Length: 271
Image 1 (cartoon, rainbow, N blue to C red):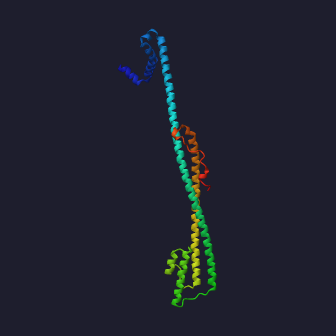
Image 2 (cartoon, helix red, strand yellow):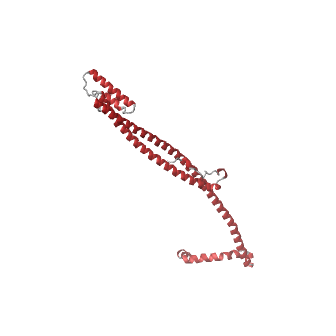
Image 3 (tube, rainbow, N blue to C red):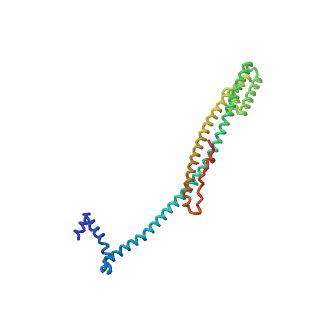
């Protein structure tokens, strides 16, 4: 027995032969196992085959029903996921549309600020020309008395403060004029002081205009990008709504409220 077992374990061919013979003789063993089978082997074999067919016919509808249930559950899960994704992507598209509108408003504000800065620079340049003409016709005279110096100093401080209040000079210019630094000289004639103030104002407003141009360019870039992102989300929301609508019949009865497929372009204004 040990020799046979060792042969079956080491040689696969005999094991396959023995398994085939046992499989072929299994129906005969079932027929001969009953007394009726020994007397009428053909009838017993037919009855065994009929029972085998009946068992298969019983299993097949059950298998088909189980497969249908699995497919139905898979469709329901897919429909639920599609409806949830359509709701989420639509909410994201609405949020992006609102953000795009805010960026559009910021861009329009920056354009207005740039135009105002440009006009302020032009006005400052006009004041420089006027001050140049006044300084050319006026006469520069040195300070002779302390009272005259005090008068010129008061004029400088008052004029610089007024220009800063109008936004024509930075607030720091007032402190510089009071301290007499960065080119502010109270000993100059008032006409020459006006020219210095006009030139400082033109330089300051030109700097403000250049900053406004850079800010407007950045705001335009951000607004255009926000509109592109909102448009992309809008198209994706439309596709998701269509897909959810196609699968809505597989949703459970309380959840058959798929997003409308006509998610319109009015959510995001044209850039």
